Length: 564
Image 1 (cartoon, rainbow, N blue to C red):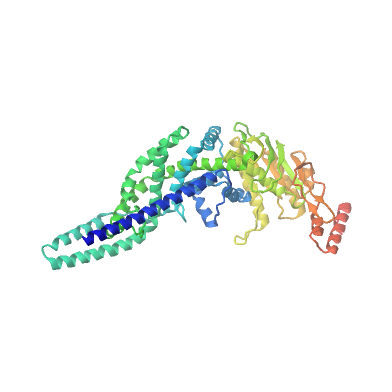
Image 2 (image 1 turned 45 degrees about the horizontal axis):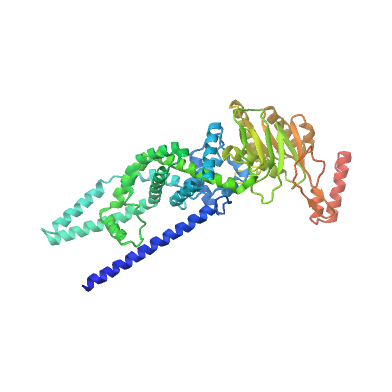
């Protein structure tokens, strides 16, 4: 009787512990989801490491296309930082698809209309948005790596068959039966096979253990699909139908993977501990893994499609949240998909989304822009702002401006360049190659009926003045002849006259006091008429002799055209 009381008490303690853990997990989930709901419409505060961003790029790299934003332009525009500001996703599929979305401009009006409909749905339907956020929170992330890394590595496992496991399991059962006829030999044989099975199990389990994380995530993908498909969302009916098809085709994976991913090892769950022993003795993990592996290898297309469709849904939520965070400081762009090489670009109250206190500017142009002005006056920032606004218009249909109207552009930049010591390339060589890639794409864009929008900061600054002005003039003229909408910043005032027939001149200026220089960051029409490099030396406290000598030399050159 005492044993029954002790066993009952022990069972009660176990149930209490399990119940407490369950309630605590539920409370943590509710708390996190409440915080998630309240964070909608606020900039993301998530921190990223360089390694994490490298894994987030993998979906984009697996689905790369020629018309996507290239690495040079992406890095010039600091798009990693803008991505981090926009991304409020809860899952790996949302992380990776949003990155892909920002690097993949939409060139079809119907596709963009579909995106806009999805974004607005989640912005307007709060209850449905909360439900979807909860589903993607349960999906979560994989941790350190992308699912695509695991799927690629599956090929390294080679062909795996279950015959040998079944053979040794049969021998184990035969040896157990032999104990009834010859206990001594039967026990000896049973222990020998048992030891062989356990040692072999651990040896092979170490090989498959890294891949179990991918199988667990695929199961969570299927659970996410099942929950999404159970919801009534007419706006996503087509996506739900495709997801249901993928789910049905991967049903065999659910059955074959349940034992190997049912719980994390070492969890302390008594039932799980008992199951662990059965796994080790009969190699159940290995047998089920091989069956699941065959299913995954045969349905990689369906897994990729699930990631794509789920990523699109969560990305629509993230874009809506970003729009809400900008409040009244953003607009839905007007994009003319049927206009080509001569389309105008009009932007009102444009600002850079990463700046805390940006100064908005407006511009309306049909041809290239030559931007002059003093150092630190805002030229480079303005170039980036124009390119970022056009990129966001064509990817997430959201602009950091009061009004945006333009055609569909192929977007390129040549700005934040540097020399490459390892490859032995100079800064000038990097510039030449960067601009050449834009020239190469202009003809292709023209044949497609598209117009190139390119931003070039300080054309060919890596060479001497005479050759820089001569080469820059010819390059920028070629951009104009090919109807590229080029925004180019320069310190060479000579270009404003040489290119007056093909470029509109704008400038930024500074305000110089006796002891200080201020920058209004306001875009002005016409070329710059002032220089401030020497004045900056004075404002920063440089030796008087350096400042005076420089002013005298500059004044002499302007009068005589010769250096003294």
